[in-house]
Image (cartoon, rainbow, N blue to C red; front, side, top):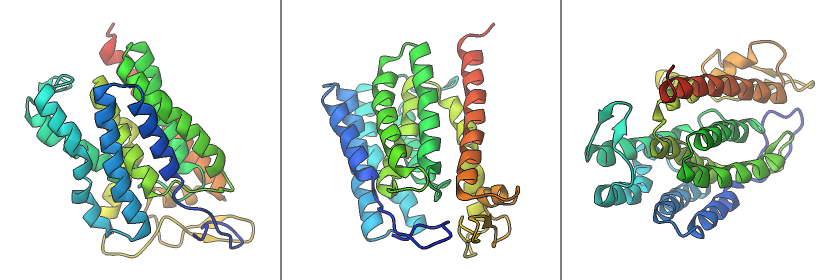
Length: 281
């Protein structure tokens, strides 16, 4: 496909997430754990839907209900075996946890994970930053299942970032971002640190609200690129990325680094929140 944000036209491969997600599924399955196998089913269904989206296209707002489907294996397994507590903070949802909370998380984060994207290294860099936070929390809380889910994800994202960093040779595509987004929503549920989600996904939440506000207007996160590689906002602050463009003479790599820096700050705040709630003074 065309590689946007470049001064000169160039092509780039799309759909690199296909290989990464297949590797994750294999790694999870060979660990011979039933919960990891169920998570693999979630990834597999999400992979099929998002691959169809990359190849044939699914209307933007139709993806919201469709992405409930990947949650079905986990929801059914949870109703039958209750693999972890059904509390969110101090509220116990009981069986509603598996019928409402889990499907909404899978749907919301699979759709919303790639809402801040489109720039070389940005999406993968943000995913990697969040995954490292999960790994640190998993190690501190000694949760083997969190580590088992997160460690392969970090490895895959590091490999992907090598090819996705500016100037990218490979794009993640929906086939990667949808399953990874679902994973980043599920892991905090399993580890009972779901309260970090609104913090680390704050830019994505703001971007979603902006998309709802301007849903009847045609615009994109891209801008006009001049011969120096500076990207100019041509739509008027209708996206979080537009705000970053208007901070100064921002090139693609600068915008990517700024968004990853913001994510690092949010992850530090989320970690402090985790420490405060898990180890109160």
